[in-house]
Image (tube, rainbow, N blue to C red; front, side, top):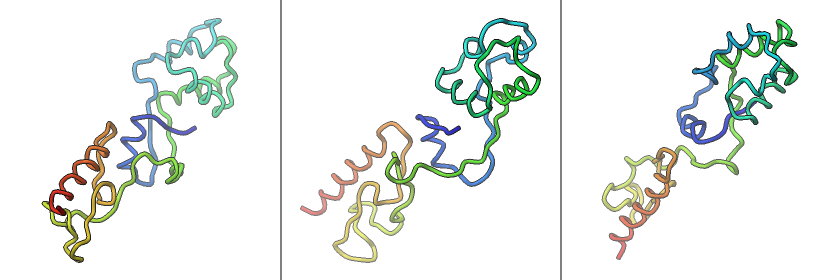
Length: 155
């Protein structure tokens, strides 16, 4: 089971090795559903995206069957929707990255011209610098704005 989407991209900026705990369905009342003798399928009673439910059930080795046919072990596994603990193994790599963290320290460049403080006539712009914005076009804005600022001092 992996994470993707805007939220995963935003929080990945702050990721450190360790264990992460999620409540995938904070507004859901799983206990009532599991205690019921409902003849409805699991996937129809849990209001989460169908792809997520399918992946979750597969990861937990639970068939998408009616609530009344669930074993005690399967019910306990479903409770992980409220307390899912895992240790992220890493990322999909640079080829799939939306934003890359790191780069030239901004203390190493002149803030007005973006010229290197160590090497005259060497300029750094955009994501080459250690500037990372939140999801939503901020990195593109920084790339264009820093390029404009730099070129003002080159001409």
